[in-house]
Amino acid sequence: MIVGVMGPEGSYSEKAAKLWMQKYSMSGSELRYFADIEDAFLATVQGKSDISIIPIENSIEGSVGVTLDLLLENEAKIVGEIVVRIEHCLLSKGGPEKVRVILSHPQGLAQCRHFLKKHFPDAELRSTGSTSHAARLAGEFEEMAAIASPEAAECYGLKVLLSNIQDKKENYTRFIVLKAGKKTLTEPETGSEKCSSSACKTSLIVYLEKDRPGALYEILGTFAKRKINLTKIESRPSKKELGDYYFYIDFEGHDSDALVKDALKDIKAKTDTLKILGSYPAFKTFRSVNIDKGY
Ligand SMILES: O=C(O)C(=O)C[C@]1(C(=O)O)C=C[C@@H](O)C=C1
Image 1 (cartoon, rainbow, N blue to C red):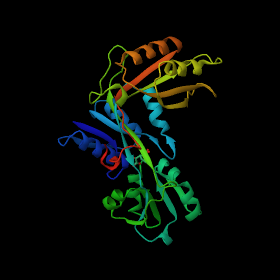
Image 2: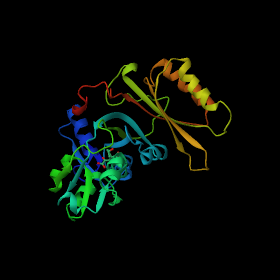
Image 3: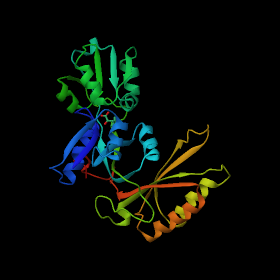
């Protein structure tokens, strides 16, 4: 099996994929690296990978917008999720006094905003395709430092100038596991393992064509009425006009459960667009004692 991730080696996406492969004993699988989130996502849609593992949300900086957009634009289903602890380091070839430019993925720069303002107020900040891409570049120029993982320091022969530099010590990124193909209401996909409704999550996107009072309230009411627990709600610009949004909703339960099926039928009747992204085993984030092992 080919697992697509954003590279190069030493990215957090690679770490997520390795944890996933370990969790599901996929030792015969092969990692394939792509230039950025979009290419890694499209790899599975275009048959270049069997699954792709993509960042979707960080506990400090919030959603990864490009991933949300790609979920809307493409036919791919979510079959799993994994949460990875993120401990950013400042990496460079030389000492801290030489650092003029700091590179990272936009998420990395944003998660270390306070640190950068306090300790490197004059440094030029530049974004790269991934944190490991930043580390690879910092390996070429002494005046550059990268915000990346300790694994990236090893990969590119860099010194760890400072560890754990993100603005909050506890820092986690959630990754989704994607497979090509459309998820439909009538053909429930069990995901990568069978799971009971309480251990599963379902993700969907809804769009309300007409802006009217109480429209979102009605959607949320369908869940509340059935005591279905929402785990996330997020709006994303529709890009049609200012103030027009898609809503991304995650909730507990599997779409083969009678209660969830019933709620989805109800939502379908109330919305103009309903895209079901998938039902998959939920990662028990902050309650998990084994987060560093990926389960
Ligand atoms: O750049 C990487 O190493 C990634 O895997 C991407 C990514 C992200 O997009 O959120 C993953 C985890 C961290 O939050 C920072 C960057």
